[in-house]
Length: 104
Image (tube, rainbow, N blue to C red; front, side):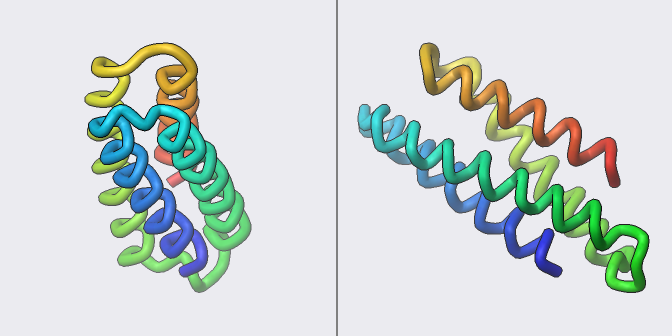
């Protein structure tokens, strides 16, 4: 459940970053992307701890998979639209999502 909640927060931070990028506020978007990366890493840590317990139900795993796929789609889109420091963080997010998907 913690993994799902942190992944939800990561998705919110990513959407926040997208909104800030569309309004040309790259410095604030960069901060949101940092928060996104922290949340997704925390979510992965929570999942790694829980996946061998009774808390790792098929429905939780399906929710995580769906959220990760949606995040992956948005990150791939953003990586084609923006460059610089922001693109580096987006690419790092793609790596984290890939690592998370493999752990499911």
